[in-house]
Length: 402
Image 1: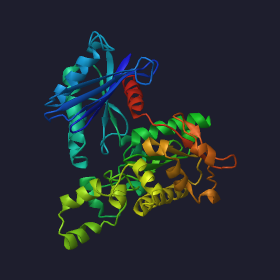
Image 2: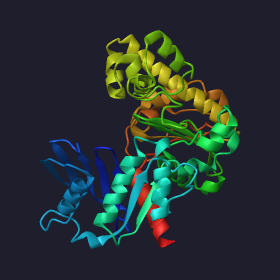
Image 3: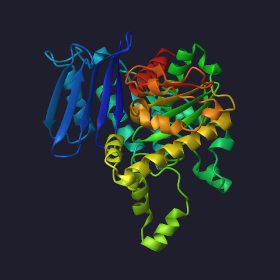
Image 4: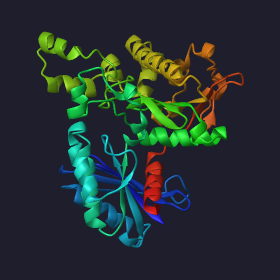
Protein backbone atom coordinates (compact mmCIF):
# COMPACT_ATOMS: atom_id res chain seq x y z
CA UNK A 1 0.00 0.00 0.00
CA UNK A 2 1.49 3.33 -1.07
CA UNK A 3 0.46 6.58 0.62
CA UNK A 4 1.02 10.05 -0.75
CA UNK A 5 1.77 12.82 1.76
CA UNK A 6 1.18 16.41 0.64
CA UNK A 7 2.24 19.66 2.30
CA UNK A 8 0.82 22.42 0.12
CA UNK A 9 2.11 25.97 0.56
CA UNK A 10 1.09 29.21 -1.11
CA UNK A 11 3.59 28.71 -3.96
CA UNK A 12 4.89 25.19 -3.34
CA UNK A 13 3.96 21.54 -2.92
CA UNK A 14 6.16 19.29 -0.78
CA UNK A 15 5.38 15.58 -1.10
CA UNK A 16 6.47 12.03 -0.33
CA UNK A 17 5.32 8.60 -1.48
CA UNK A 18 5.68 6.06 1.34
CA UNK A 19 5.35 2.28 1.15
CA UNK A 20 3.36 1.72 4.32
CA UNK A 21 4.27 -1.92 4.92
CA UNK A 22 7.97 -1.08 5.27
CA UNK A 23 7.59 2.71 5.83
CA UNK A 24 10.22 3.18 3.11
CA UNK A 25 10.22 6.48 1.21
CA UNK A 26 9.82 5.68 -2.50
CA UNK A 27 9.88 9.30 -3.67
CA UNK A 28 10.28 12.73 -2.13
CA UNK A 29 10.10 16.07 -3.83
CA UNK A 30 9.23 19.72 -3.94
CA UNK A 31 7.40 21.83 -6.49
CA UNK A 32 8.56 25.43 -6.18
CA UNK A 33 7.69 28.83 -7.65
CA UNK A 34 4.09 27.94 -8.51
CA UNK A 35 2.48 30.86 -10.31
CA UNK A 36 5.81 32.23 -11.57
CA UNK A 37 7.32 32.02 -15.04
CA UNK A 38 10.10 29.65 -13.96
CA UNK A 39 8.65 26.79 -11.92
CA UNK A 40 10.79 23.93 -10.61
CA UNK A 41 10.10 20.31 -9.65
CA UNK A 42 12.87 18.55 -7.70
CA UNK A 43 12.26 14.84 -7.12
CA UNK A 44 14.33 12.06 -5.57
CA UNK A 45 13.35 8.42 -6.02
CA UNK A 46 14.36 5.99 -3.23
CA UNK A 47 16.26 8.63 -1.22
CA UNK A 48 19.05 7.39 1.02
CA UNK A 49 19.35 4.03 -0.78
CA UNK A 50 21.75 2.61 -3.35
CA UNK A 51 18.98 3.08 -5.91
CA UNK A 52 18.65 6.84 -5.31
CA UNK A 53 17.85 8.83 -8.45
CA UNK A 54 17.27 12.56 -8.79
CA UNK A 55 15.27 14.44 -11.41
CA UNK A 56 14.63 18.13 -12.03
CA UNK A 57 11.93 19.62 -14.24
CA UNK A 58 12.07 23.35 -14.97
CA UNK A 59 9.04 24.92 -16.65
CA UNK A 60 6.22 27.34 -15.99
CA UNK A 61 3.84 25.96 -13.33
CA UNK A 62 0.80 28.27 -13.37
CA UNK A 63 -1.15 26.74 -10.46
CA UNK A 64 -1.25 23.93 -7.90
CA UNK A 65 -3.18 21.62 -10.22
CA UNK A 66 -0.47 21.95 -12.87
CA UNK A 67 2.17 21.25 -10.23
CA UNK A 68 0.39 18.16 -8.91
CA UNK A 69 -0.18 16.81 -12.43
CA UNK A 70 3.53 17.27 -13.13
CA UNK A 71 4.35 15.25 -10.01
CA UNK A 72 1.97 12.44 -11.00
CA UNK A 73 3.40 12.41 -14.52
CA UNK A 74 6.90 11.85 -13.12
CA UNK A 75 5.83 9.31 -10.48
CA UNK A 76 4.02 7.20 -13.12
CA UNK A 77 6.61 7.58 -15.92
CA UNK A 78 7.19 4.15 -17.50
CA UNK A 79 10.96 4.50 -17.38
CA UNK A 80 11.59 6.64 -14.29
CA UNK A 81 8.54 6.25 -12.04
CA UNK A 82 7.80 4.11 -9.01
CA UNK A 83 4.05 3.52 -9.50
CA UNK A 84 2.13 2.23 -12.52
CA UNK A 85 -0.74 4.69 -12.21
CA UNK A 86 -2.59 6.83 -9.69
CA UNK A 87 -4.74 3.87 -8.63
CA UNK A 88 -1.77 2.48 -6.65
CA UNK A 89 -2.12 5.33 -4.16
CA UNK A 90 -4.06 3.89 -1.22
CA UNK A 91 -4.62 7.17 0.63
CA UNK A 92 -3.43 10.77 0.72
CA UNK A 93 -2.46 12.56 3.92
CA UNK A 94 -2.54 16.36 3.89
CA UNK A 95 -0.69 18.56 6.34
CA UNK A 96 -3.11 21.27 7.51
CA UNK A 97 -1.69 24.03 9.70
CA UNK A 98 -4.78 25.13 11.61
CA UNK A 99 -7.76 23.09 12.71
CA UNK A 100 -8.86 25.56 15.38
CA UNK A 101 -11.05 23.98 18.06
CA UNK A 102 -12.91 21.89 15.48
CA UNK A 103 -10.41 19.05 15.26
CA UNK A 104 -8.78 17.13 18.10
CA UNK A 105 -7.40 14.51 15.73
CA UNK A 106 -6.89 13.67 12.07
CA UNK A 107 -10.02 13.49 9.92
CA UNK A 108 -11.19 11.90 6.67
CA UNK A 109 -11.82 14.86 4.38
CA UNK A 110 -15.49 15.50 3.63
CA UNK A 111 -17.38 18.60 2.47
CA UNK A 112 -18.08 19.33 6.16
CA UNK A 113 -14.37 19.19 6.98
CA UNK A 114 -13.57 21.54 4.11
CA UNK A 115 -16.25 23.93 5.37
CA UNK A 116 -14.68 23.91 8.84
CA UNK A 117 -11.23 24.58 7.35
CA UNK A 118 -12.61 27.55 5.46
CA UNK A 119 -14.11 28.85 8.70
CA UNK A 120 -10.66 28.68 10.32
CA UNK A 121 -8.94 30.72 7.59
CA UNK A 122 -8.92 33.88 9.79
CA UNK A 123 -6.76 31.95 12.29
CA UNK A 124 -4.19 31.04 9.60
CA UNK A 125 -4.74 33.34 6.61
CA UNK A 126 -1.38 32.50 5.02
CA UNK A 127 -1.46 28.73 5.49
CA UNK A 128 -5.00 27.33 5.44
CA UNK A 129 -5.91 28.67 1.96
CA UNK A 130 -2.78 27.01 0.55
CA UNK A 131 -3.56 23.77 2.40
CA UNK A 132 -7.09 23.88 0.97
CA UNK A 133 -5.68 24.38 -2.54
CA UNK A 134 -3.70 21.18 -2.15
CA UNK A 135 -6.72 19.29 -0.85
CA UNK A 136 -9.02 20.44 -3.67
CA UNK A 137 -6.46 19.61 -6.36
CA UNK A 138 -5.76 16.16 -4.89
CA UNK A 139 -9.49 15.39 -4.62
CA UNK A 140 -9.92 16.36 -8.28
CA UNK A 141 -6.98 14.25 -9.48
CA UNK A 142 -7.69 11.31 -7.12
CA UNK A 143 -11.51 11.33 -6.75
CA UNK A 144 -11.74 7.76 -5.44
CA UNK A 145 -8.73 7.84 -3.07
CA UNK A 146 -9.37 8.43 0.67
CA UNK A 147 -7.97 11.81 1.75
CA UNK A 148 -7.07 12.65 5.35
CA UNK A 149 -6.36 16.02 6.97
CA UNK A 150 -3.63 15.93 9.64
CA UNK A 151 -3.56 19.10 11.74
CA UNK A 152 -0.55 20.87 13.27
CA UNK A 153 -2.83 22.07 16.06
CA UNK A 154 -4.68 18.84 16.91
CA UNK A 155 -2.12 17.39 19.33
CA UNK A 156 -2.38 20.51 21.50
CA UNK A 157 -6.18 20.43 21.80
CA UNK A 158 -5.71 18.53 25.08
CA UNK A 159 -4.35 21.69 26.77
CA UNK A 160 -6.53 22.76 29.72
CA UNK A 161 -8.18 26.21 29.63
CA UNK A 162 -5.76 27.63 32.21
CA UNK A 163 -2.93 26.88 29.75
CA UNK A 164 -4.54 27.97 26.48
CA UNK A 165 -6.45 31.09 27.56
CA UNK A 166 -4.95 34.59 27.41
CA UNK A 167 -5.82 37.00 30.23
CA UNK A 168 -7.88 39.29 27.99
CA UNK A 169 -11.66 39.88 27.90
CA UNK A 170 -13.25 36.45 27.82
CA UNK A 171 -15.69 37.39 25.08
CA UNK A 172 -12.76 37.52 22.63
CA UNK A 173 -12.37 33.81 23.21
CA UNK A 174 -16.11 33.13 23.10
CA UNK A 175 -16.79 35.11 19.90
CA UNK A 176 -13.47 35.10 18.07
CA UNK A 177 -11.69 32.04 19.50
CA UNK A 178 -8.65 34.06 20.57
CA UNK A 179 -6.48 31.58 22.49
CA UNK A 180 -3.23 29.62 22.35
CA UNK A 181 -3.41 26.81 19.80
CA UNK A 182 0.19 25.68 19.34
CA UNK A 183 1.75 24.22 16.21
CA UNK A 184 4.33 21.58 15.15
CA UNK A 185 1.95 19.11 16.80
CA UNK A 186 2.72 16.34 14.32
CA UNK A 187 6.43 16.59 15.13
CA UNK A 188 5.92 16.74 18.89
CA UNK A 189 3.58 13.72 18.81
CA UNK A 190 6.00 11.73 16.64
CA UNK A 191 9.13 12.25 18.76
CA UNK A 192 7.14 11.69 21.97
CA UNK A 193 6.10 8.27 20.68
CA UNK A 194 9.67 7.45 19.66
CA UNK A 195 10.95 8.57 23.08
CA UNK A 196 8.44 6.36 24.88
CA UNK A 197 9.69 3.41 22.83
CA UNK A 198 13.30 4.19 23.80
CA UNK A 199 12.28 4.48 27.44
CA UNK A 200 10.46 1.12 27.17
CA UNK A 201 7.34 2.72 28.62
CA UNK A 202 3.86 3.33 27.24
CA UNK A 203 3.47 6.92 26.07
CA UNK A 204 0.57 7.29 28.50
CA UNK A 205 3.07 6.87 31.36
CA UNK A 206 5.63 9.39 30.06
CA UNK A 207 6.21 13.01 31.11
CA UNK A 208 8.30 14.69 28.44
CA UNK A 209 9.55 18.07 27.27
CA UNK A 210 9.88 18.02 23.49
CA UNK A 211 12.03 20.76 21.96
CA UNK A 212 11.53 21.39 18.22
CA UNK A 213 14.31 23.71 17.05
CA UNK A 214 14.51 24.65 13.38
CA UNK A 215 13.88 27.89 11.55
CA UNK A 216 10.60 27.71 13.43
CA UNK A 217 10.89 26.67 17.09
CA UNK A 218 8.50 25.36 19.71
CA UNK A 219 8.48 23.45 22.97
CA UNK A 220 5.76 21.24 24.45
CA UNK A 221 5.09 19.91 27.95
CA UNK A 222 3.65 16.39 27.66
CA UNK A 223 1.98 14.87 30.73
CA UNK A 224 1.19 11.15 30.53
CA UNK A 225 1.35 11.31 26.76
CA UNK A 226 -0.81 14.39 26.15
CA UNK A 227 0.11 18.00 25.46
CA UNK A 228 -0.66 20.22 28.45
CA UNK A 229 1.23 23.35 27.36
CA UNK A 230 3.15 24.56 24.32
CA UNK A 231 5.14 27.67 23.46
CA UNK A 232 3.59 28.71 20.14
CA UNK A 233 0.37 30.60 20.61
CA UNK A 234 -2.56 31.76 18.52
CA UNK A 235 0.00 32.24 15.74
CA UNK A 236 3.48 30.78 15.14
CA UNK A 237 5.16 33.96 16.48
CA UNK A 238 4.86 33.47 20.25
CA UNK A 239 7.37 31.64 22.41
CA UNK A 240 10.96 30.74 21.59
CA UNK A 241 13.40 32.82 19.55
CA UNK A 242 13.26 31.55 15.95
CA UNK A 243 15.12 32.11 12.70
CA UNK A 244 13.17 35.19 11.64
CA UNK A 245 10.32 35.29 14.20
CA UNK A 246 10.66 37.19 17.44
CA UNK A 247 9.03 34.82 19.91
CA UNK A 248 7.78 36.49 23.10
CA UNK A 249 7.68 40.29 23.05
CA UNK A 250 5.73 42.89 25.02
CA UNK A 251 2.35 43.24 23.25
CA UNK A 252 2.59 47.02 23.71
CA UNK A 253 5.55 46.98 21.31
CA UNK A 254 3.06 47.41 18.46
CA UNK A 255 1.78 50.71 19.86
CA UNK A 256 5.31 51.91 20.58
CA UNK A 257 6.43 51.21 17.01
CA UNK A 258 3.32 52.90 15.63
CA UNK A 259 3.87 56.09 17.63
CA UNK A 260 7.66 56.26 17.46
CA UNK A 261 8.45 54.70 14.07
CA UNK A 262 5.25 55.45 12.16
CA UNK A 263 4.73 51.77 11.36
CA UNK A 264 1.32 50.36 10.49
CA UNK A 265 0.15 46.97 11.76
CA UNK A 266 1.03 45.14 8.53
CA UNK A 267 4.60 46.46 8.65
CA UNK A 268 4.96 45.49 12.31
CA UNK A 269 3.57 42.03 11.61
CA UNK A 270 6.08 41.55 8.78
CA UNK A 271 8.89 42.79 11.07
CA UNK A 272 8.04 40.27 13.81
CA UNK A 273 7.62 37.38 11.36
CA UNK A 274 10.34 37.96 8.78
CA UNK A 275 12.95 40.36 10.17
CA UNK A 276 13.24 39.39 13.84
CA UNK A 277 14.52 36.39 15.80
CA UNK A 278 18.14 35.45 15.08
CA UNK A 279 18.07 37.47 11.86
CA UNK A 280 16.96 40.58 13.69
CA UNK A 281 19.68 40.23 16.32
CA UNK A 282 22.67 39.52 14.07
CA UNK A 283 21.56 39.60 10.42
CA UNK A 284 21.73 35.80 10.02
CA UNK A 285 19.07 33.15 10.56
CA UNK A 286 21.07 30.04 9.65
CA UNK A 287 22.70 28.71 12.81
CA UNK A 288 25.64 27.34 10.81
CA UNK A 289 26.47 30.87 9.63
CA UNK A 290 26.08 32.16 13.19
CA UNK A 291 28.58 29.62 14.56
CA UNK A 292 31.10 30.58 11.83
CA UNK A 293 30.63 34.26 12.67
CA UNK A 294 31.12 33.57 16.40
CA UNK A 295 34.38 31.74 15.62
CA UNK A 296 35.51 34.89 13.79
CA UNK A 297 34.76 37.07 16.82
CA UNK A 298 31.34 38.43 15.80
CA UNK A 299 29.83 39.67 19.08
CA UNK A 300 26.32 40.14 17.70
CA UNK A 301 26.26 36.53 16.52
CA UNK A 302 27.34 35.40 19.99
CA UNK A 303 24.60 37.56 21.49
CA UNK A 304 21.98 36.03 19.18
CA UNK A 305 23.01 32.53 20.26
CA UNK A 306 22.88 33.57 23.92
CA UNK A 307 19.43 35.14 23.58
CA UNK A 308 17.99 32.08 21.86
CA UNK A 309 19.45 29.47 24.20
CA UNK A 310 18.56 31.53 27.29
CA UNK A 311 14.93 31.58 26.12
CA UNK A 312 15.08 27.82 25.53
CA UNK A 313 16.41 27.33 29.07
CA UNK A 314 13.65 29.48 30.59
CA UNK A 315 10.95 27.45 28.86
CA UNK A 316 12.53 24.13 29.86
CA UNK A 317 12.57 25.30 33.48
CA UNK A 318 8.97 26.49 33.25
CA UNK A 319 7.79 23.19 31.80
CA UNK A 320 9.67 21.23 34.45
CA UNK A 321 7.61 23.18 37.00
CA UNK A 322 4.41 22.45 35.03
CA UNK A 323 5.09 18.71 34.86
CA UNK A 324 6.67 18.11 38.27
CA UNK A 325 8.19 14.82 37.13
CA UNK A 326 10.12 14.79 33.85
CA UNK A 327 11.21 11.48 32.33
CA UNK A 328 13.05 12.98 29.36
CA UNK A 329 13.88 16.10 27.38
CA UNK A 330 13.83 15.49 23.62
CA UNK A 331 15.58 17.65 21.02
CA UNK A 332 14.42 17.44 17.41
CA UNK A 333 14.26 19.26 14.02
CA UNK A 334 17.17 20.79 12.10
CA UNK A 335 18.93 22.63 14.91
CA UNK A 336 17.77 20.34 17.71
CA UNK A 337 19.08 17.25 15.92
CA UNK A 338 22.36 18.65 14.62
CA UNK A 339 23.60 21.49 16.83
CA UNK A 340 25.46 20.26 19.91
CA UNK A 341 26.30 23.82 21.00
CA UNK A 342 22.67 24.94 21.07
CA UNK A 343 21.68 21.81 23.01
CA UNK A 344 24.46 22.30 25.57
CA UNK A 345 23.73 26.00 26.05
CA UNK A 346 20.00 25.36 26.35
CA UNK A 347 20.63 22.90 29.22
CA UNK A 348 23.39 24.84 30.98
CA UNK A 349 22.79 25.26 34.71
CA UNK A 350 20.01 22.69 34.94
CA UNK A 351 22.18 20.08 36.69
CA UNK A 352 20.61 21.00 40.05
CA UNK A 353 17.26 19.87 38.60
CA UNK A 354 18.65 16.49 37.58
CA UNK A 355 19.44 17.39 33.96
CA UNK A 356 23.03 16.27 33.29
CA UNK A 357 24.37 16.26 29.74
CA UNK A 358 27.16 13.91 28.64
CA UNK A 359 29.34 16.29 26.61
CA UNK A 360 31.03 13.51 24.64
CA UNK A 361 27.73 11.91 23.63
CA UNK A 362 26.30 15.32 22.82
CA UNK A 363 29.21 16.13 20.49
CA UNK A 364 29.04 12.84 18.58
CA UNK A 365 27.41 13.15 15.15
CA UNK A 366 24.69 10.68 14.26
CA UNK A 367 21.47 10.57 12.28
CA UNK A 368 20.01 8.00 14.67
CA UNK A 369 17.86 8.56 17.75
CA UNK A 370 20.18 8.52 20.76
CA UNK A 371 20.49 9.27 24.46
CA UNK A 372 22.98 12.05 25.31
CA UNK A 373 22.44 12.34 29.06
CA UNK A 374 25.05 11.41 31.65
CA UNK A 375 24.83 8.26 33.72
CA UNK A 376 23.83 10.22 36.82
CA UNK A 377 21.16 12.30 35.08
CA UNK A 378 17.74 11.88 36.69
CA UNK A 379 16.17 13.24 33.51
CA UNK A 380 17.06 11.45 30.28
CA UNK A 381 18.10 13.65 27.37
CA UNK A 382 17.46 12.42 23.82
CA UNK A 383 18.09 13.55 20.28
CA UNK A 384 15.34 12.08 18.09
CA UNK A 385 15.04 12.94 14.39
CA UNK A 386 11.54 14.07 13.53
CA UNK A 387 9.70 12.65 10.53
CA UNK A 388 6.53 14.63 9.98
CA UNK A 389 5.80 12.99 6.62
CA UNK A 390 5.87 9.52 8.14
CA UNK A 391 3.78 10.76 11.06
CA UNK A 392 1.19 12.12 8.62
CA UNK A 393 1.17 8.83 6.70
CA UNK A 394 0.67 6.86 9.93
CA UNK A 395 -2.17 9.18 10.95
CA UNK A 396 -3.80 8.76 7.54
CA UNK A 397 -3.46 4.98 7.79
CA UNK A 398 -5.11 4.96 11.21
CA UNK A 399 -8.03 7.07 9.96
CA UNK A 400 -8.53 5.01 6.83
CA UNK A 401 -8.40 1.69 8.69
CA UNK A 402 -10.86 3.00 11.28
